[in-house]
Image (tube, rainbow, N blue to C red; front, side, top):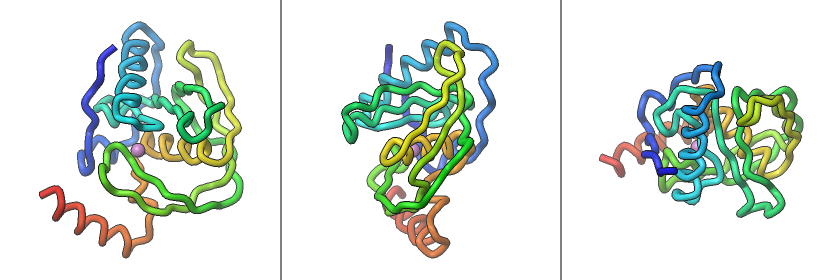
Length: 166
Ligand code: NI
């Protein structure tokens, strides 16, 4: 396994919808292992394939730092099939270092997809895991958490971030 380079905002690939995975082969397994390695190396709780420059509907999630019973999750071609409620909490992203904001997300979600062997999985989650699932599936659809902020806050973020990272 080896750690990959994380693509940072405002790289274009982060704004593009990723392509569904067709073949679950050796190359995909290697990518999954490298993404897991990269997530742990970066102390992240989730990582989407386009964050390492690969346009595939693939994400890894491990929120055990917040909820110790939560396992490592590998999701291929995931989609949210049901969501419920609304809750605010602080959120950040490995592709937007040193920036967090309070964001509204659904409290509960049900996600369908495939695991790393290609078997269908259905995950019902709430709390922090539900938030992580929504954040990563947003990535796969080319949506960053800053895109979910209000317009004024987002403009302020863009100005501040452009200034700080210049
Ligand atoms: Ni993120």
